[in-house]
Amino acid sequence: MVLIIAGGIIVFSNNDAVGNITFGLGVVMLPLGAGIGVLRHRLYDIDVLINRTLVYGALTLLLAALYFGGVIGLQQVVRLISGQQAENNPLVIVLTTLVIAALFQPLRSRLQVFIDRRSYRSRCDAARTLDSFAAKLRAEIELGSLGDHLVGVVEQTMHPRHVSLWLRPPERS
Image (cartoon, rainbow, N blue to C red; front, side, top):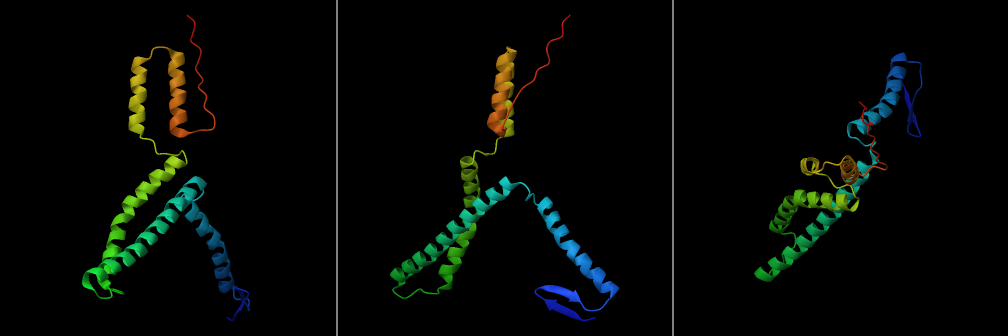
């Protein structure tokens, strides 16, 4: 079997059935694999994709700046203390790398909270919201006020485009 590669496309030069089937399966598997990846990692939800891009992009820039600033700053401190050049000192690079590794998770979570708050998609504490609503349920008797409070809680926690509450009319005896 002879393969001719032209412009990134592999073309089989003879009528080998196994080769053609293999090529066809390869062409079909590429979009199928991409589709599985999109569904598995929830990439169809554009809000999640934008949120992760913002968080990890900002985190990468911040950690890179801290790393290079830390390496240069520690080299200057070592030079001042020891009086000799500290360029390419492995101890400085290792210490800075360990500090950056220790800062990764706390910085990521703080950036996540900041970006969530800025985009009005802060994560709601379900238990606290339910406890607050349960306290209101115990204290409120009037159905209209309770319905307004329910609509307010749903708007505050979920930020939907539209909220409405339908109540069944009371049965007449």
